[in-house]
Image (cartoon, rainbow, N blue to C red; front, top):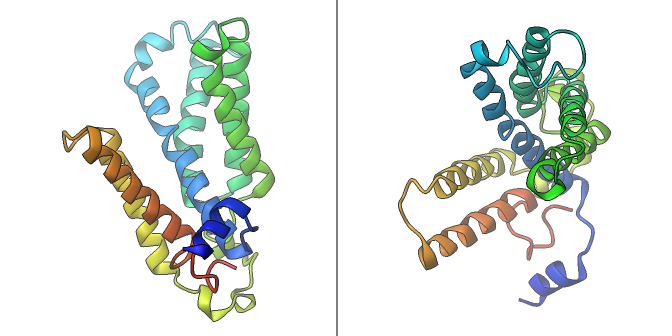
Length: 211
């Protein structure tokens, strides 16, 4: 328990391995959460191509719509997989810049806050790149596996646990189980603990992992 309190309250820095798993989570999260926006534009394509937000970059309504769909769906998939991560994140960043520009004079909390948050996330990923757990690394070998201590190598289990986190969050947030109140809160705590374990290796109180 003492080690848990030190980890939580004193905030010791995470190691390279742990940060790469945190980056994997952020990259997948930032990609998946944008795909429904692009899919919604495909569903409403016939309507939007006639007047796509006032032709925001002055290249024609339909051309702007097509570019936006490509950014929000294909660049998001690239980000999830970690393929040309910086390019994908930059495309999504510019997409959100246009959205913020379009909503510039709208109320911040009601309208402009969401694309601004997205913009910050994608800018972070432009800076960071895809990290170790990406197809970029598989192709270009940007990280050397032999630099990691053996204790940190639980990758298959940790990726499986992170996948469980995404699936569980989708089920819980979508209220597919029809639960609420205390049961919902306990499920959220369980999902959060699985997320922590997936990022830190076995557990944050085991100081030999995630460093």
